[in-house]
Image (tube, rainbow, N blue to C red; front, side):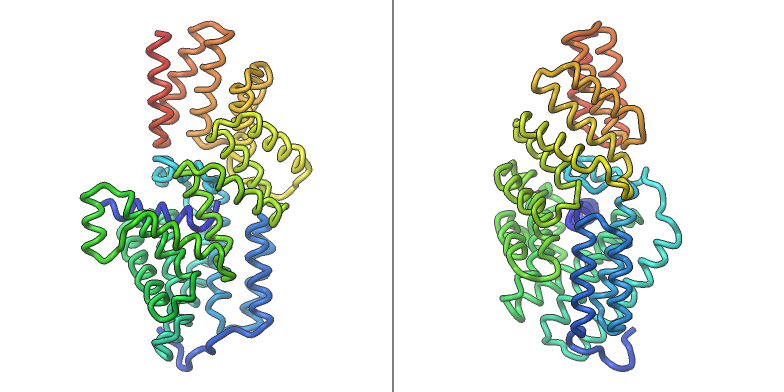
Amino acid sequence: MSRFAAIRAAGISSLLIWALSAPPPAAANGESIRLRAQGYAEIYSLDRDRAVDSFKQAIAADPQDAAAYRGLASALWLSITFRRGSMTVDDYLGGVSRARSQAPPPPPDVAAAFNDALEHALTLARARVAAAPRDAGAHYELGAAIGLRASYMATVENSLLGAFRAAKGAYDEHERVLELDDRRKDAGLIVGTYRYIVATLSLPARVVAYVVGFGGDKDKGLKLIEGAASYAGDNQEDARFALLLLYNREKRYNDALALLALLREKFPRNRLMWLESGSTSLRAGRAADAERFLTDGMTRFAGDTRPRMFGEDALWAYKRGAARAALGRNAEARADLEKALLGEARRWVRGRTHLELGKLSLKDGPRAAAADHFRTAAGLCDSDNDRPFADEARKLLKQVS
Protein backbone atom coordinates (compact mmCIF):
# COMPACT_ATOMS: atom_id res chain seq x y z
CA MET A 1 0.00 0.00 0.00
CA SER A 2 2.76 2.41 0.95
CA ARG A 3 6.36 2.32 2.20
CA PHE A 4 5.07 2.77 5.76
CA ALA A 5 3.29 -0.53 5.59
CA ALA A 6 6.58 -2.33 5.13
CA ILE A 7 8.34 -0.11 7.66
CA ARG A 8 5.75 -1.25 10.19
CA ALA A 9 6.36 -4.90 9.32
CA ALA A 10 10.10 -4.36 9.68
CA GLY A 11 9.73 -2.68 13.06
CA ILE A 12 7.31 -5.09 14.70
CA SER A 13 8.97 -8.24 13.42
CA SER A 14 12.50 -7.22 14.26
CA LEU A 15 11.83 -5.67 17.66
CA LEU A 16 10.26 -8.89 18.68
CA ILE A 17 12.90 -11.02 19.05
CA TRP A 18 32.36 4.14 0.64
CA ALA A 19 32.32 7.48 0.20
CA LEU A 20 33.10 9.02 -3.25
CA SER A 21 36.41 10.82 -3.72
CA ALA A 22 34.59 14.14 -4.06
CA PRO A 23 31.52 14.93 -1.94
CA PRO A 24 28.23 15.36 -3.81
CA PRO A 25 26.56 18.74 -4.08
CA ALA A 26 24.22 19.81 -1.28
CA ALA A 27 21.17 19.61 -3.52
CA ALA A 28 20.18 18.06 -6.84
CA ASN A 29 19.71 20.13 -9.95
CA GLY A 30 16.27 21.32 -10.97
CA GLU A 31 15.70 18.72 -13.66
CA SER A 32 16.49 15.85 -11.32
CA ILE A 33 14.14 17.28 -8.69
CA ARG A 34 11.36 17.61 -11.27
CA LEU A 35 11.84 14.06 -12.52
CA ARG A 36 11.90 12.69 -8.96
CA ALA A 37 8.60 14.36 -8.20
CA GLN A 38 7.20 12.92 -11.41
CA GLY A 39 8.44 9.46 -10.46
CA TYR A 40 6.77 9.54 -7.06
CA ALA A 41 3.49 10.75 -8.59
CA GLU A 42 3.68 7.78 -10.97
CA ILE A 43 4.34 5.37 -8.11
CA TYR A 44 1.26 6.60 -6.27
CA SER A 45 -0.77 6.33 -9.48
CA LEU A 46 0.25 2.66 -9.93
CA ASP A 47 2.30 3.52 -13.02
CA ARG A 48 5.31 1.60 -11.73
CA ASP A 49 7.16 1.11 -15.02
CA ARG A 50 6.88 4.82 -15.80
CA ALA A 51 8.18 5.61 -12.33
CA VAL A 52 11.26 3.45 -12.85
CA ASP A 53 11.97 5.29 -16.12
CA SER A 54 11.47 8.70 -14.47
CA PHE A 55 13.93 7.93 -11.68
CA LYS A 56 16.46 6.64 -14.21
CA GLN A 57 16.11 9.93 -16.09
CA ALA A 58 16.58 11.82 -12.81
CA ILE A 59 19.82 9.93 -12.22
CA ALA A 60 20.98 10.75 -15.74
CA ALA A 61 20.17 14.42 -15.10
CA ASP A 62 22.23 14.41 -11.89
CA PRO A 63 24.34 11.31 -11.16
CA GLN A 64 25.23 12.82 -7.75
CA ASP A 65 21.60 12.98 -6.55
CA ALA A 66 21.25 10.36 -3.80
CA ALA A 67 17.49 10.89 -3.65
CA ALA A 68 17.13 9.91 -7.32
CA TYR A 69 18.84 6.58 -6.65
CA ARG A 70 16.69 6.09 -3.56
CA GLY A 71 13.57 6.82 -5.60
CA LEU A 72 14.58 4.20 -8.15
CA ALA A 73 15.19 1.68 -5.36
CA SER A 74 11.78 2.49 -3.89
CA ALA A 75 10.02 1.94 -7.21
CA LEU A 76 11.78 -1.39 -7.69
CA TRP A 77 10.99 -2.53 -4.13
CA LEU A 78 7.33 -1.60 -4.51
CA SER A 79 7.17 -3.57 -7.75
CA ILE A 80 8.14 -6.65 -5.71
CA THR A 81 5.50 -6.08 -3.03
CA PHE A 82 2.92 -5.40 -5.76
CA ARG A 83 3.68 -8.73 -7.43
CA ARG A 84 3.23 -10.44 -4.08
CA GLY A 85 -0.16 -8.83 -3.47
CA SER A 86 0.83 -7.20 -0.17
CA MET A 87 -0.04 -3.55 -0.69
CA THR A 88 -3.30 -3.09 1.18
CA VAL A 89 -4.14 -2.00 4.71
CA ASP A 90 -5.44 -5.52 5.45
CA ASP A 91 -1.91 -6.84 4.96
CA TYR A 92 -0.69 -4.78 7.90
CA LEU A 93 -3.55 -5.18 10.36
CA GLY A 94 -3.03 -8.17 12.61
CA GLY A 95 -0.94 -11.22 11.89
CA VAL A 96 -1.15 -11.30 8.11
CA SER A 97 1.72 -8.81 7.93
CA ARG A 98 4.08 -11.35 9.47
CA ALA A 99 3.40 -14.19 7.00
CA ARG A 100 6.25 -13.31 4.66
CA SER A 101 8.21 -16.54 4.34
CA GLN A 102 5.59 -17.99 1.98
CA ALA A 103 6.14 -15.28 -0.63
CA PRO A 104 8.15 -16.19 -3.73
CA PRO A 105 11.64 -14.69 -4.08
CA PRO A 106 11.89 -11.50 -6.11
CA PRO A 107 13.05 -11.70 -9.74
CA PRO A 108 16.88 -11.75 -9.60
CA ASP A 109 17.24 -8.83 -12.01
CA VAL A 110 14.87 -6.66 -9.98
CA ALA A 111 16.60 -7.55 -6.70
CA ALA A 112 20.00 -6.77 -8.23
CA ALA A 113 18.79 -3.45 -9.62
CA PHE A 114 17.31 -2.54 -6.22
CA ASN A 115 20.55 -3.29 -4.39
CA ASP A 116 22.62 -1.38 -6.94
CA ALA A 117 20.42 1.73 -6.73
CA LEU A 118 20.30 1.63 -2.94
CA GLU A 119 24.08 1.24 -2.62
CA HIS A 120 24.55 4.30 -4.82
CA ALA A 121 22.09 6.23 -2.64
CA LEU A 122 23.85 5.19 0.57
CA THR A 123 27.32 5.96 -0.77
CA LEU A 124 26.32 9.45 -1.91
CA ALA A 125 24.42 10.16 1.32
CA ARG A 126 27.31 9.05 3.53
CA ALA A 127 29.72 11.20 1.56
CA ARG A 128 27.46 14.21 2.03
CA VAL A 129 27.19 13.63 5.80
CA ALA A 130 30.96 13.28 6.04
CA ALA A 131 31.43 16.55 4.17
CA ALA A 132 28.76 18.44 6.14
CA PRO A 133 28.02 16.70 9.47
CA ARG A 134 25.61 19.43 10.63
CA ASP A 135 23.59 19.47 7.41
CA ALA A 136 20.06 18.31 8.30
CA GLY A 137 19.33 17.50 4.66
CA ALA A 138 22.35 15.20 4.48
CA HIS A 139 21.25 13.28 7.57
CA TYR A 140 17.70 13.10 6.23
CA GLU A 141 18.84 11.52 2.97
CA LEU A 142 21.05 9.00 4.75
CA GLY A 143 18.27 8.04 7.19
CA ALA A 144 15.74 7.65 4.37
CA ALA A 145 18.06 5.33 2.46
CA ILE A 146 18.81 3.25 5.56
CA GLY A 147 15.09 3.07 6.32
CA LEU A 148 14.42 1.74 2.84
CA ARG A 149 17.04 -0.94 3.41
CA ALA A 150 15.30 -1.93 6.67
CA SER A 151 11.97 -2.28 4.89
CA TYR A 152 13.45 -4.39 2.11
CA MET A 153 15.30 -6.67 4.53
CA ALA A 154 12.18 -7.35 6.55
CA THR A 155 9.63 -7.71 3.75
CA VAL A 156 11.66 -9.31 0.97
CA GLU A 157 14.70 -10.96 2.54
CA ASN A 158 13.06 -11.92 5.86
CA SER A 159 16.25 -10.81 7.61
CA LEU A 160 14.85 -9.62 10.91
CA LEU A 161 18.17 -8.95 12.64
CA GLY A 162 19.44 -6.97 9.67
CA ALA A 163 16.18 -5.05 9.49
CA PHE A 164 16.41 -4.24 13.20
CA ARG A 165 19.91 -2.81 12.86
CA ALA A 166 18.97 -0.77 9.80
CA ALA A 167 15.80 0.51 11.47
CA LYS A 168 17.82 1.80 14.41
CA GLY A 169 20.21 3.57 12.04
CA ALA A 170 17.34 5.24 10.19
CA TYR A 171 15.70 6.28 13.47
CA ASP A 172 18.95 7.80 14.77
CA GLU A 173 19.61 9.75 11.57
CA HIS A 174 16.13 11.27 11.50
CA GLU A 175 16.20 12.13 15.18
CA ARG A 176 19.43 13.96 14.34
CA VAL A 177 17.59 15.83 11.58
CA LEU A 178 14.98 17.04 14.08
CA GLU A 179 17.74 18.12 16.48
CA LEU A 180 19.50 20.11 13.77
CA ASP A 181 16.35 21.63 12.26
CA ASP A 182 12.99 21.16 13.95
CA ARG A 183 11.28 22.57 10.86
CA ARG A 184 12.07 19.38 8.96
CA LYS A 185 8.75 17.71 9.67
CA ASP A 186 9.47 15.08 7.00
CA ALA A 187 11.91 13.42 9.42
CA GLY A 188 8.95 12.78 11.71
CA LEU A 189 7.71 9.94 9.52
CA ILE A 190 10.39 7.42 10.46
CA VAL A 191 10.79 8.70 14.03
CA GLY A 192 7.02 8.74 14.56
CA THR A 193 6.57 5.34 12.99
CA TYR A 194 8.96 3.67 15.40
CA ARG A 195 7.65 5.59 18.39
CA TYR A 196 4.18 4.30 17.55
CA ILE A 197 5.43 0.75 17.01
CA VAL A 198 7.37 0.65 20.25
CA ALA A 199 4.41 1.94 22.22
CA THR A 200 2.23 -0.91 20.93
CA LEU A 201 4.69 -3.72 21.74
CA SER A 202 4.44 -6.06 24.71
CA LEU A 203 6.25 -4.88 27.83
CA PRO A 204 9.33 -7.14 27.45
CA ALA A 205 9.79 -6.13 23.81
CA ARG A 206 9.22 -2.49 24.70
CA VAL A 207 11.97 -2.65 27.34
CA VAL A 208 14.37 -4.10 24.76
CA ALA A 209 13.46 -1.28 22.36
CA TYR A 210 14.16 1.34 25.02
CA VAL A 211 17.49 -0.26 25.93
CA VAL A 212 18.77 -0.11 22.35
CA GLY A 213 17.67 3.49 22.00
CA PHE A 214 14.20 3.62 20.44
CA GLY A 215 11.64 5.99 21.89
CA GLY A 216 7.99 5.21 22.56
CA ASP A 217 4.75 7.21 22.98
CA LYS A 218 1.95 6.37 20.54
CA ASP A 219 0.34 9.81 20.60
CA LYS A 220 3.65 11.55 19.94
CA GLY A 221 4.34 9.12 17.13
CA LEU A 222 1.00 9.90 15.50
CA LYS A 223 1.60 13.63 15.80
CA LEU A 224 5.02 13.32 14.19
CA ILE A 225 3.55 11.40 11.26
CA GLU A 226 0.72 13.91 10.91
CA GLY A 227 3.37 16.63 10.81
CA ALA A 228 5.15 14.82 7.97
CA ALA A 229 1.84 14.46 6.13
CA SER A 230 1.38 18.23 6.23
CA TYR A 231 4.98 19.00 5.17
CA ALA A 232 5.81 19.42 1.48
CA GLY A 233 8.65 16.91 1.45
CA ASP A 234 9.27 13.97 -0.85
CA ASN A 235 7.71 11.61 1.71
CA GLN A 236 4.47 13.56 2.19
CA GLU A 237 2.37 10.95 0.40
CA ASP A 238 4.13 8.17 2.30
CA ALA A 239 3.10 9.90 5.52
CA ARG A 240 -0.49 10.13 4.31
CA PHE A 241 -0.56 6.43 3.51
CA ALA A 242 0.99 5.80 6.92
CA LEU A 243 -1.84 7.68 8.55
CA LEU A 244 -4.37 5.70 6.52
CA LEU A 245 -3.05 2.54 8.14
CA LEU A 246 -2.79 4.03 11.62
CA TYR A 247 -6.24 5.60 11.52
CA ASN A 248 -7.63 2.17 10.64
CA ARG A 249 -5.65 0.58 13.48
CA GLU A 250 -6.96 3.21 15.88
CA LYS A 251 -10.51 2.83 14.52
CA ARG A 252 -10.50 6.50 13.51
CA TYR A 253 -12.51 5.65 10.45
CA ASN A 254 -13.83 9.15 9.76
CA ASP A 255 -10.25 10.43 9.62
CA ALA A 256 -9.23 7.53 7.38
CA LEU A 257 -12.13 8.13 4.99
CA ALA A 258 -11.41 11.86 4.82
CA LEU A 259 -7.81 11.05 3.93
CA LEU A 260 -8.96 8.57 1.29
CA ALA A 261 -11.13 11.25 -0.30
CA LEU A 262 -8.02 13.41 -0.66
CA LEU A 263 -6.00 10.53 -2.09
CA ARG A 264 -8.72 9.56 -4.61
CA GLU A 265 -8.79 13.15 -5.84
CA LYS A 266 -5.02 13.47 -6.03
CA PHE A 267 -4.36 10.06 -7.60
CA PRO A 268 -7.44 9.23 -9.69
CA ARG A 269 -5.55 6.49 -11.55
CA ASN A 270 -4.85 4.55 -8.37
CA ARG A 271 -7.69 2.02 -8.28
CA LEU A 272 -6.51 0.72 -4.89
CA MET A 273 -7.81 3.93 -3.31
CA TRP A 274 -11.35 2.84 -4.20
CA LEU A 275 -10.62 -0.63 -2.86
CA GLU A 276 -9.30 0.85 0.39
CA SER A 277 -12.30 3.18 0.64
CA GLY A 278 -14.59 0.16 0.48
CA SER A 279 -12.49 -1.80 2.96
CA THR A 280 -12.35 1.07 5.45
CA SER A 281 -16.10 1.58 5.16
CA LEU A 282 -16.62 -2.11 5.90
CA ARG A 283 -14.48 -1.89 9.04
CA ALA A 284 -16.53 1.13 10.08
CA GLY A 285 -19.74 -0.89 9.72
CA ARG A 286 -20.91 1.17 6.73
CA ALA A 287 -21.78 -1.61 4.32
CA ALA A 288 -23.79 0.57 1.93
CA ASP A 289 -20.88 3.00 1.53
CA ALA A 290 -18.50 0.07 1.08
CA GLU A 291 -20.63 -1.46 -1.65
CA ARG A 292 -20.88 1.91 -3.42
CA PHE A 293 -17.11 2.52 -3.36
CA LEU A 294 -16.33 -0.99 -4.54
CA THR A 295 -18.89 -1.03 -7.35
CA ASP A 296 -17.75 2.42 -8.48
CA GLY A 297 -14.13 1.28 -8.50
CA MET A 298 -14.87 -1.95 -10.35
CA THR A 299 -16.83 -0.02 -12.99
CA ARG A 300 -14.39 2.87 -13.24
CA PHE A 301 -11.36 0.61 -13.77
CA ALA A 302 -12.98 -2.22 -15.74
CA GLY A 303 -10.93 -1.27 -18.79
CA ASP A 304 -7.66 -0.71 -16.90
CA THR A 305 -5.08 -2.85 -18.73
CA ARG A 306 -2.21 -2.15 -16.34
CA PRO A 307 -0.84 -5.12 -14.37
CA ARG A 308 -2.95 -6.17 -11.42
CA MET A 309 -1.60 -6.81 -7.96
CA PHE A 310 -1.36 -10.53 -7.16
CA GLY A 311 -4.84 -11.68 -6.16
CA GLU A 312 -6.34 -8.24 -6.71
CA ASP A 313 -9.46 -9.35 -8.58
CA ALA A 314 -10.27 -11.86 -5.86
CA LEU A 315 -9.86 -9.17 -3.21
CA TRP A 316 -12.29 -6.81 -4.97
CA ALA A 317 -14.85 -9.60 -5.32
CA TYR A 318 -14.47 -10.74 -1.71
CA LYS A 319 -14.82 -7.22 -0.33
CA ARG A 320 -17.95 -6.44 -2.34
CA GLY A 321 -19.39 -9.84 -1.52
CA ALA A 322 -18.88 -9.15 2.19
CA ALA A 323 -20.52 -5.74 1.85
CA ARG A 324 -23.52 -7.15 -0.01
CA ALA A 325 -23.86 -9.95 2.52
CA ALA A 326 -23.98 -7.35 5.30
CA LEU A 327 -26.74 -5.58 3.38
CA GLY A 328 -28.77 -8.78 3.06
CA ARG A 329 -28.31 -8.95 -0.72
CA ASN A 330 -27.53 -12.64 -0.44
CA ALA A 331 -27.72 -13.75 -4.09
CA GLU A 332 -25.45 -10.93 -5.26
CA ALA A 333 -23.11 -11.56 -2.35
CA ARG A 334 -22.82 -15.26 -3.18
CA ALA A 335 -22.06 -14.47 -6.83
CA ASP A 336 -19.23 -12.13 -5.81
CA LEU A 337 -17.81 -14.54 -3.24
CA GLU A 338 -17.86 -17.51 -5.60
CA LYS A 339 -16.09 -15.35 -8.20
CA ALA A 340 -13.43 -14.53 -5.60
CA LEU A 341 -12.53 -18.23 -5.40
CA LEU A 342 -11.96 -18.65 -9.14
CA GLY A 343 -8.61 -16.95 -9.69
CA GLU A 344 -5.32 -16.44 -7.89
CA ALA A 345 -5.57 -15.06 -4.36
CA ARG A 346 -3.76 -14.79 -1.06
CA ARG A 347 -4.74 -17.58 1.32
CA TRP A 348 -6.18 -15.19 3.87
CA VAL A 349 -8.48 -13.80 1.17
CA ARG A 350 -9.67 -17.29 0.24
CA GLY A 351 -10.15 -18.09 3.89
CA ARG A 352 -12.26 -15.02 4.60
CA THR A 353 -14.25 -15.69 1.45
CA HIS A 354 -15.13 -19.19 2.67
CA LEU A 355 -16.07 -17.68 6.02
CA GLU A 356 -18.58 -15.35 4.33
CA LEU A 357 -19.93 -18.20 2.20
CA GLY A 358 -20.38 -20.27 5.35
CA LYS A 359 -22.41 -17.48 6.93
CA LEU A 360 -24.58 -17.28 3.82
CA SER A 361 -25.09 -21.05 3.92
CA LEU A 362 -26.39 -20.73 7.47
CA LYS A 363 -29.07 -18.42 6.10
CA ASP A 364 -30.14 -20.20 2.95
CA GLY A 365 -28.24 -23.46 2.56
CA PRO A 366 -27.62 -26.80 4.26
CA ARG A 367 -25.67 -26.73 7.53
CA ALA A 368 -23.25 -29.30 6.11
CA ALA A 369 -22.23 -26.81 3.42
CA ALA A 370 -21.75 -24.13 6.08
CA ALA A 371 -19.56 -26.49 8.10
CA ASP A 372 -17.41 -27.25 5.06
CA HIS A 373 -16.88 -23.55 4.41
CA PHE A 374 -16.00 -22.82 8.05
CA ARG A 375 -13.57 -25.75 8.17
CA THR A 376 -11.86 -24.58 5.00
CA ALA A 377 -11.82 -20.98 6.21
CA ALA A 378 -10.11 -21.91 9.46
CA GLY A 379 -7.39 -23.86 7.68
CA LEU A 380 -6.67 -21.20 5.07
CA CYS A 381 -6.65 -18.32 7.55
CA ASP A 382 -4.38 -20.24 9.92
CA SER A 383 -1.98 -20.93 7.06
CA ASP A 384 -1.63 -17.17 6.37
CA ASN A 385 -1.44 -16.11 10.04
CA ASP A 386 -4.93 -14.57 9.93
CA ARG A 387 -5.83 -15.73 13.41
CA PRO A 388 -8.90 -13.59 14.26
CA PHE A 389 -10.78 -14.83 11.21
CA ALA A 390 -9.60 -18.40 11.77
CA ASP A 391 -10.92 -18.22 15.33
CA GLU A 392 -14.26 -16.86 14.11
CA ALA A 393 -14.53 -19.73 11.62
CA ARG A 394 -13.81 -22.32 14.32
CA LYS A 395 -16.38 -20.76 16.63
CA LEU A 396 -19.06 -20.93 13.94
CA LEU A 397 -18.02 -24.45 13.03
CA LYS A 398 -18.73 -25.60 16.59
CA GLN A 399 -22.20 -24.12 16.34
CA VAL A 400 -23.10 -26.15 13.25
CA SER A 401 -21.26 -29.41 14.06
